[in-house]
Length: 549
Image: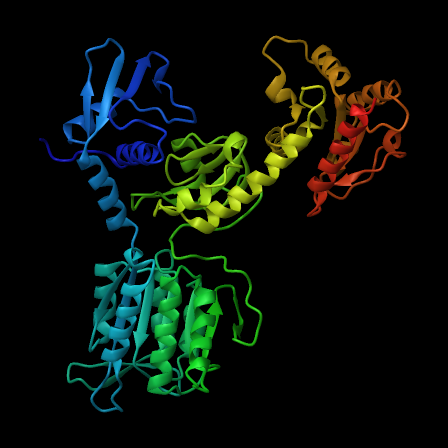
């Protein structure tokens, strides 16, 4: 058997096959793959399958992951081997564990601390936690300043924990070659963490007077814990144990911080207000236990977790599952053939197809999102960012309910999108959201075919539509052109509709005035938070009116 020569993309494809087999969507002993000049396809697979090229199948067979029967022309009959399951599980275990780097420094010329007990207790709580397989705890004792960068290079941690002494002037105490105290200034550590800001998610400075250091580091690291005054040995250990106990239970950094403070109170320790949490870009004041914590926006992962509506900018990055490769969101969309995005939830997105992962090949059709066992099913896939998935699934289910409300005699509600060319990006996003909602929108760039008469087809589409949405912006209302003609024609058609019916809906993309011919119509502000929801309610009212006898 040859050595494993799979590329990262081929490993990602093999992972997809293994996960689909485990989900019962593929038969591990008979996976039929056909190919032609148009590409490859998996026989009898219900869902959105990636293309698996013959060169990839050959590489998987040579590495011992597949047994392929090529006796039929243009077909592979493939069977997974045990080695495939082992590779997928070990690859995740190797690449996706959350690494904690524990630094301890206890110079001989200052009061001795029980740092060994703190490390033992943290390790024990992580080993007993339900997420124990997700963590690796690496430690360095008697740390000198020069040991810090070497350890970070070696471990590449996501969480850095320092336990030891701090000076009331803001420095942290490390050890010199003689084991005596050597102070490190806040700016020095802040400069170090600036260099590894893309790798580290959280820093815990479990040392007296470390708030100054925490504040400086939080300019670069999302979550940093420090102490605003001196803290006793028992209090420091209790806080650390409570913090990692909560992380091991799957809590966010903010929640873990709060749980750790409650742990101190339960133990009767009055220093529960000594630890303070700083959050990047919000360092004007620390997060205290008495304050209401915002919902956690960063999880124990290197991937972004923003929940921005629409397709995000190309600057956002995604850490690919089973790989250390980080790609832009645009590259991930192309690599995994993701459908147009309606709403983005970190590593998951709701698309016109359904719910799709952005870090590996995995998708759920919109018609299947209401199945009850998705959360339990995805919990078993340890590469999954569950809060991202849960958010995407919840929104997809909302869309699924909306889809069920749009049916006129068994046909989709037809909506014409009237707009100016300068507003195309915003209108395209509206088109995708309407499409995902079970509506049949008409947009020139999607529906016009090469060679068709533009004026004739648009006129025809307006007349065939149930509703015309006139998308308005400051730019479009100030120009004369075809959009004004579309409005005029839509108004003429509206005059043919029953009085009081909702046929033409002005939709503002930004704050702007209404054209004179629409001045008698009430509009919807799509740039407002609830704007699209109001538009959907108007469309649902249109459906209800048309269904009346």
